Image (cartoon, rainbow, N blue to C red; front, side, top):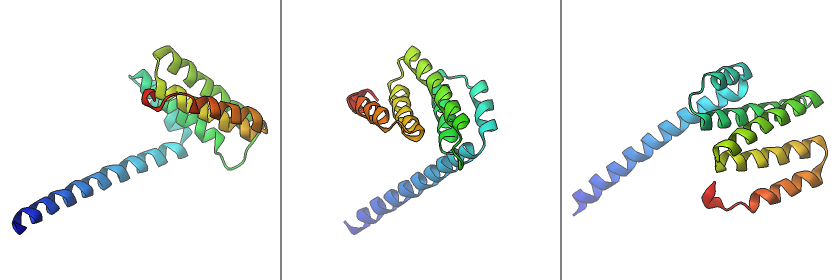
Length: 133
């Protein structure tokens, strides 16, 4: 009996270690992409999958939104790229991309100083059922 528990525990540890290994590699890749907009732009141009393109556009938009110094040009660029992602997501009926775009748009509006509009956008996103996103 105790031997079976030992085997089960070892399997759980192996699965847990594999999960952390893959998760840390994923986070490292995402962090590198956030730091390098040129890399994001090349990956957007090379993306075969349109859904992947939407996600990359959202990452690029978030990069410009979260830059250290918030200039109006950066916020406008973030808004423009986010609009591209939203249009492509709507065209593909990619619910997750549309929802993320709405949230990012709310953050952009809040950073531009229009908190009321940003709050309305967040409420709009909350009204979308989570099953579809």
